[in-house]
Amino acid sequence: MPNVLPEVYSLIAFMIVGALIAIEARDLLSTVISLSAAGCALSIIFLLLGAPDLAITQLVVEVICMVILIR
Image 1 (spheres, rainbow, N blue to C red):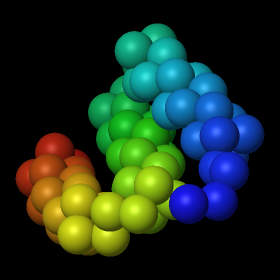
Image 2: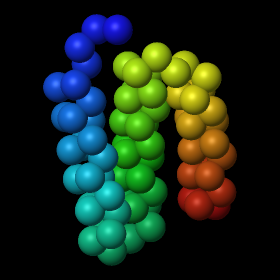
Image 3: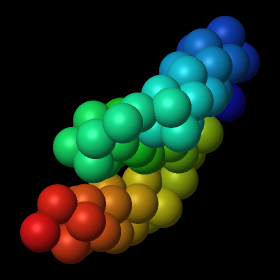
């Protein structure tokens, strides 16, 4: 397995920033967008660590949840 630690750490930092923006956001749309960015980063982490099945599941569940939240 290649050394992917710097990429994973940067994506984890991106996820933390996205979660903090979601907590502090005032409207629903910006909260949903920042949560989807954090979920997308998580699926990329799954891909980097060699779990494509988890990445696909994360994307599908996230898309369904975000559509429900926006509706």
